Image (cartoon, rainbow, N blue to C red):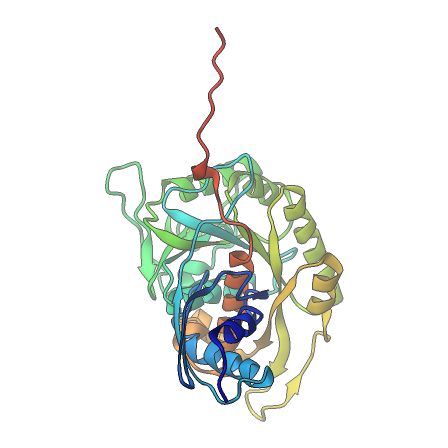
Length: 364
């Protein structure tokens, strides 16, 4: 059976890309299409890191084409990414060299927010992006331990700026690098906020596609001030399925909405417990809470992550699951979540502020 390129192009343009939740036509992702007999060659450019995504997307696209009546085509997909800067709060300027700041937040502590933030950053790096992570949890910094950098200190090349440490291919900065591990920071809100804004602005991040900010838990003065001062392209809300966690997570989501930070979606952590001895799976914190919350607020459910002893052990050992156990179900869950987060961000409007001239009004 012969098909016209026009018919095939129309079908492909109608394919809904799972991470973007847009059609390839809406995303303007098709950069090349060639048909030689039954051999279809397709070049796609997506707005998120795709280093390991090609085979999965090609299989989904091939299945879609078969269902659309193009079962006899032999499909080859070449996949590339182009990550652009997205808009931030209107009163703030994006960080120099950093395309997108993504805040990972929770309404309360104990939901695994820092573990999610670490694996999110590492998953993006594994997919080919340039990534950094800022540990903004000033009273309980955990990224130095999770990244295997505990006890290390960053240096300053000029006495004014800080050179971040690096681990597993990403750049890392935390207040935990600057104080003793056993030292308690007894700081009031304004002092803590000032310290964090300095860490953000004085760190030599270089060129990054994504900077993940591991926010402090809660919705108090520090969190609100950070949301107003840090140029954020999107926020991710981490919760567990438990009702009390969901109640607090809703407050975190509302806080970002009030300061005009777009919420990319909800991550349900500790969704399913898998017994390390017998493999029995159980929803010990409830079922479907994250999905209900996402539906109530009109945002995406970005991922449902398991509760496993190995995840805690790997994070405590300085090698989170994405780098400690690549290809495992738990690492794949984080990778799937990271693609959804990046896809949700890519589907947003890009930052076009640089296209417009600055207007200065002078009084005569």
